[in-house]
Amino acid sequence: MEYSYFTLNGGQVGNLACEHCNFDQFNIKGKIKYAFLFLESIPFFPLKKKIILSCVKCHNILNNSSIDSGLYKSIKKNTFKFHFMFPMYTGLFLSVLALVYWQYVKYQENLLTQAHIQSPRKHDFYFINYHKINKNTRPNQHYRLGKVVSVNNGLVSLIYGGFTYTKSSSLIRDVQGGMTYDSRYFNADEHSFTIEQLQNLYNDDAILAVRRPINNRLYGNVVIDSISINKSYRTLAEMYNDKGLAFMTYSHIESNLDNAYKYFIKSSENGFSKGQVNLSKLYLGAGEINKALYWLDKASIQGNAVAIKLYIENCKTVNGCEKSIFINKLTEIGYDVSSNEVNFNKK
Ligand SMILES: [Zn+2]
Image (cartoon, rainbow, N blue to C red; front, top):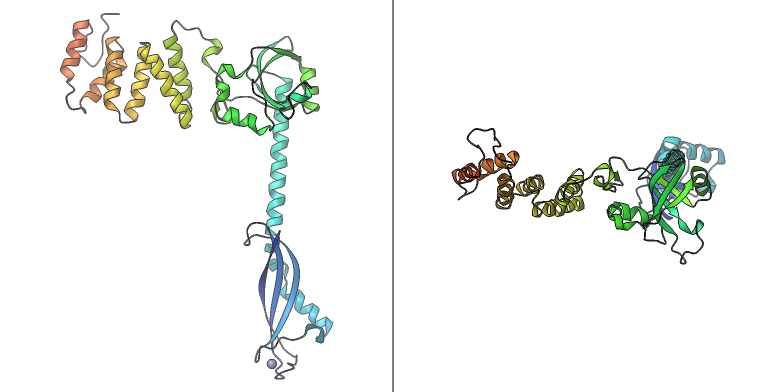
């Protein structure tokens, strides 16, 4: 806490005598000493209140002990009125408000955790103090993530993150940083618990919190490899395209956009026309028209109607791009591109 002073103007008072000039009018000033934290403009609480009476004529300061105590009290009361004093408690008031809000958020989070423990679901994330489950942890390396991989007949199977930390906040950082998306983040060994055991672990503070991803996302990042959930792929290229799309869902996060590029490029290089179109769209958005046309051409040769349309549309804007050459090439392969509709005469 630091301290500062604030002065209130309390008007004037008469019927007093100045020791110097015998004038009877005095100016009233109220001086408040207050405590603040970081910001002088936000007082936390007042510490001291003092009345200063100065002669209107010669500015001589009156010795307060020379005034009648009843008069002094009434001056003090009028000067430090409640509505003047209230702002002196601003910091305290805000702190209490913040504390109440923080408690409320904690309360809500705990309710949610309890609910997730009672009705577990695949992909729930557990924030664990592992030291309370297994004493054989390295000193100070207590915190690790857990993830539900299956729920069968009331048995919940968890896998643990390969990393342990001294601080529980490191776990959130891993999630936010997109580390957990990589399936190698977690160890393969599964550990089964009954719901009752999980509840006990929560009561013992071994489970700190349980979070359930919404739309495959937790703390702003994609955490679930949605592709691996219920889908089988004919090709790797198709899977890469889906991974890219998963990252595009939250492309406002820069690392997600980078990952989307990465997977669309992999998909494109493996010859998947939808991946090539998606990559082209990213290039078009970034103003890299020539790169976009390169991949749109590849996808068009495979008969991708969206690619053909996008190629023709963007060809116009590029010097040296000949729409007729493109159409002739496709016609030679066996596609009918004469109308706006692309007819696939060839697979
Ligand atoms: Zn005077």
